[in-house]
Amino acid sequence: PEARAQVLQLLENADVLVEGFRPGVMERLGLGPDLVLALKPRIVYARMTGWGQHGPLAPTAGHDINYIAITGALHAIGTTEQPVPPLNLLGDYGGGSLYLVMGILAALHEARRSGLGQVVDAAITDGVVNLMAQFIGQSQRGASVERRESTMPDGGWPWSGAYETADGPHVSVGPLEPQ
Image (cartoon, rainbow, N blue to C red; front, side, top):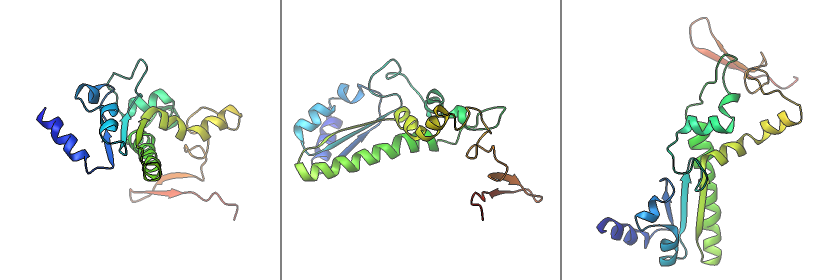
């Protein structure tokens, strides 16, 4: 109760509250968006989850590799033998944080205009699928095949890739323009 009171006091001077718990945790702590927005209507209440607020996976744990695997993005990255996780750049940072920040900025802009905050909810899996839109579209149009090392961005073109040098490090090559 004391920590809850401290959080509410801190929110008096805040424009944004960002939370990354599983769905329902903030509500159980007495800090859900309904309560916070009732106390401070201008606040932007930002939530980031892996799977979203609803659905069969919503209450379960997950990590970057799980999020990008279920979206199909992990399948698209790597060698023909196996997928290679791209650190946590694609899921956590790209699909999650980047989309959350864009939502926060839009909500702050609206809050300054109207005086009303809102809930911004970013699911990492939703963001990753959105980031994959170009590649999914190309596949659906028959412009690419769903096989690693078959197109330019996934190492399938010899003039676009990374190659080991004689002294050990690698050099990237990407001369895509005709000249």
